[in-house]
Image (cartoon, rainbow, N blue to C red; front, side, top):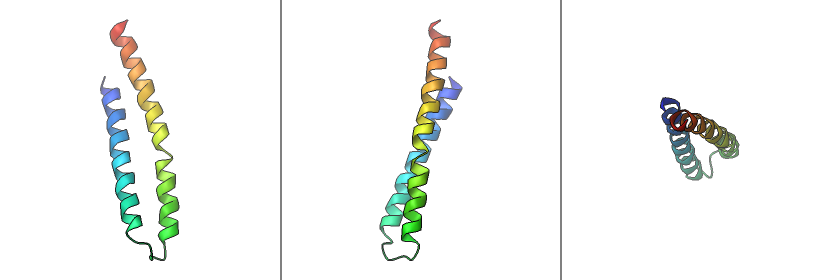
Length: 68
């Protein structure tokens, strides 16, 4: 079950960071690197499905071990 908790924690933490980064970037519309920051933010947020997949796999494994 520890791997399930770790995966879920990673998902929540990354999601929070991405949200905070998006908010910060939106507050800097005239910054010369605004577009670059938006691209980096989008790239980071694309990793969220990977963490979700890791969580789903860890949960399934923990569930199978608990139920079987």
